[in-house]
Each structure stands twice: as C-alpha cells, then as structure tokens.
Length: 267
Ligand SMILES: *[C@@H]1O[C@H](CO)[C@@H](O)[C@H](O)[C@H]1NC(C)=O
Image (tube, rainbow, N blue to C red; front, side, top):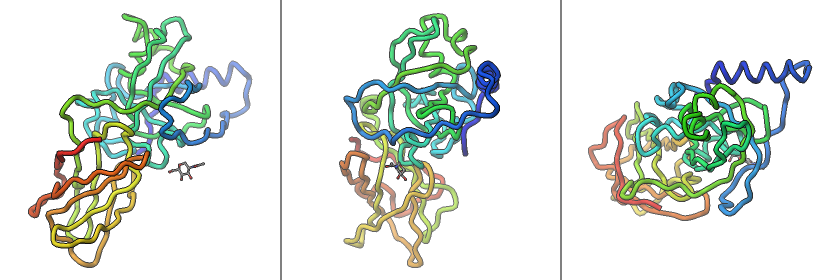
C-alpha cells in the first residue's frame, strides 16, 4: 500500500526545499474533503508522478485501493494517488478528477481525466495528485510529455468530474483471496458517475435481510460472520451522492475466492 514517489519527483521536492532555504519538509495541512460538487471551480494542487514514465508502474498490481491491473482498460493507466481529502481513507477510490496545468511552458492546459486508485502521504500541498507517468505526461503539449515529466513537480488545477467509462462497461465485484463462508471481502471497481462507493450491503438469496459490509481498506468491503454465508449473493451499493443499485445474485452459489464477478449494473 502507499505511494511510491518517483526519484525525479523526490529530487525536485528536495531541490525546491534547498532553493527556499527551508530547514525541513513543509507540512501543509490537507484541504477539506472533495465531494460530489461536479460544477465546482478549478482548485489549485501540486502534481508529481510515480511508476514508469509511460505507464502506471508499481500501482499496476494494486495500490492503496487494492485495484489491480490499472494499466489495462478501462483505467488504462490514467490513474493517480490522491492525498487525504481526495482518497478519503479509501472512500475516494474510483472517483475521477480533471487535471490541467498552465505552467511550465510544456503544459497544454487541456484537462486530462484520472481515476483515483491509490493514496499518497506527502504533505506538500492542501491537494496533491501523484499521477502515473502516463497521466502526468498527458498534461503536456503534443511531443513534450517527456520534457514535462522532467519537471518532477508542477502546479496544477483540478476539479471533480463524473467518471465516464466505455459503453457497456459494468461494475465488477472481485471476491478477494482467502475468502470463506465466514469472511467475505469484496472489491468494487469500474463504477461510473460518482465513481466511489460509500456503502455496501449483501443479501443471501434465501434471506430477506441486507447485511452491512464495512470498509476494510481501499475499495474492499468485508463482512465477518460466525454463521456461514450461503450464496448466491446480491450486493447493494451506495455511491457517494446517495444513489443505490442492486446487483442481483451477482456472486453465484459456487463462488470462489480471488475471482471477479461482472454485474449487469452501472450508474
Ligand atoms: C474526510 O473523509 C474522511 C474519510 O471518509 C472522513 O473520515 C473525515 O471525517 C472527512 N473529513 C471531513 C472534514 O468531513
């Protein structure tokens, strides 16, 4: 878990510190949580990058949201670590932001859209996006993505946007490793609209009761119960703006751990 600050970015931060003659790392307080205010004005943030220059690198195999293969569609490497008010202890996993930069001169000022799939702990600004190399480079004018990456750390503007996913992309539930009938942990991904989930409940087919899951970490929700759970399971999710959807019988009776189940629902 956690961010993997790029050496270039770290070097740039250190250089900046030396330049201002500071005696220690700046400790900037995180800004207020970003919510589903989709027509909000652009806010200032810092952006750095991590991973490989043209991809998402180490986070491909699961950052602090637990979502793997973020280099593949539909996220396609357009991902970022958000700091606390963006990551929100995991509740921000899957949410989307437009990011643009005006300075330095390599910047195109055209917005790129990124999905939050990881968190960063650095306290360099109220809002901070540690972008994949691909997402950071996409902020540049054509042909200047590599030059922009050499800047390491830049000022950006950002705003929350609704997540758009390719037509036909449904929400996927991944039953995590080591699950058993007394312990079920379910990762949710590929959520359009708000992108992030604030509540998850589960219903056994033979029962009328919706049982609450609690956020385990990242995008993973869990339930522990002494009474063995019996599938198929329906899952009810609530997105950040309060919209609910039910994926009926999405996890079959003969479910297996470490398996993805694609629903037929999408916001
Ligand atoms: C920000 O979000 C986190 C995670 O959901 C929460 O614990 C915290 O209370 C929120 N802060 C504010 C000021 O709402």
